[in-house]
View 1 (cartoon, helix red, strand yellow):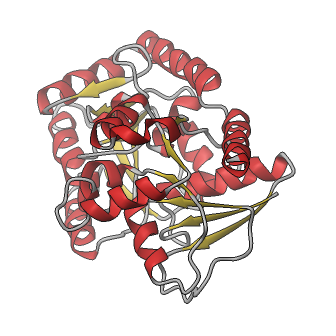
View 2 (tube, one colour):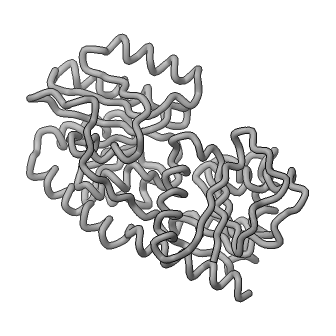
Length: 332
């Protein structure tokens, strides 16, 4: 069996890229041939490579990509992303493309129950082809990392490509309140600049707070394990989120996470059990101080998170589940 995985911005280090590469790796281990193509990046495709199954990621972008093809796929499977669910589904200019893509898909994959409920409400007639599968997580080897945590400091790490939806300035502004009281705080920002204007805003804030903040920039995904090992707490401040690979990976490493209370984060973080969900600055500061000042709490939350990931987000289970979806679509 051969699967074509079609995703936007594959050559950029984004969450979708990590997800698609992990799925391809898992499927290859099961003996499935895979080919990943980028449906953006000035692609010149007039038709898709030959394959038994076409699996598209990002309903809106995949649908727009298909419109430019001379030979469209006879059938396809689609994975809904956070941008689909939080933006394009409700934007008047993109909504119909998303809905049409879902209606014409052979199968629809979502990452959590909340997403499944949203799609069932929007398109009640397609519930029979909806599949819910949480993201898997990547394995990391110990590799060298070009930055080392300072002794006697408490390190927050925020892994994200810099764009407005990631709301990175809020992390800096909130943590600066804690830094006034505790100069042991450090913050690493790990990820490429994906939006120039937002990138400049973040870089200006980093420069103003350079005594305690480092902008690490883009890091190869295989090196991220070392960043997690050094971190005391992982942050996510996104306005909206699908299902963050970085948060899942951090939890898999047993690192406490402090994340914005949005639909995607709430689907994987159980508040005060496997991490902390905050709704405003006061909650963020309260939970951050609890994490900093209570070693036993950090250990308990971290172990709970690690156990949860091992049970619910296995990359092997993810690959096996996808293979069954592909086989079912072929049989139909």
